[in-house]
Image (cartoon, one colour):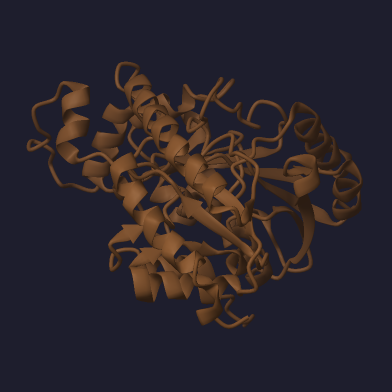
Length: 374
């Protein structure tokens, strides 16, 4: 049996995020209440929902609404899952075997890195380069994708940088995968949470051997529904569905119904508009605070309620994050969790009045860094 690879960031967040006063580790926007969602949908209640086992790959109506978000997809391409985490898990489990190579664009949400290693693959990294605006260099893509590459993993929009891949970078990644007939796993959970401009297009429909994952957590403000999905070619989707027979079997029946409401043509645009409104207002607060702090280098995010900050203080990022948690009851994500010390990932999806208070607490710690050890 291969050694278990701990998922450091998820352990950090899961342990502390509900025990601090201000959670700046979250990468989505201020979540809706059930009442707010029902009001947007014009539904009085869901009290008549019978608590049976639902269709285990998602109800037909839900899968149709998810499919409508992707070029050329039908409900046969879709498997609904318990969050995008289960979708990513099922995809890596199905596609990766011992001895394979998996090329992963980094920094990224480390789930797929850990899974690839535990399933016996060698991980080859494609770094996003800060000097290129957090885009990959073509020579790095070419070096990482080899004849043994089975899967290329990309998170777009990116976590933690908030950058959206350029058209040239997308084309280079697709060309590299096509050259060796590799699959692309595109984690697109932040699509729809852009601060401006159109929604980030999916890799699905651009390259035949693509698996795309998404969820209602980030762009929709509904993380508590734990409703995600995977969109895959029709020959692969049933095999991914079969994998979920060994995990959670099915999405919750109420979750399925609420997700179907959220993705209806009348409600989805309202949710996206709400998210962008929160992002716009809170980013102004965040940007002004960053610039005033005078210790950060950063690139403004294109999407997602997160900003990736390089800081100029002689303090390890995990030490700094722990001080914020213990002394100020504020949770942030240390760069160590992305194998990049001297960075912090700070979520700014709180309502502006709450974000202002949380950032003032962070400021107090930044002004007294000598208390921490390097």
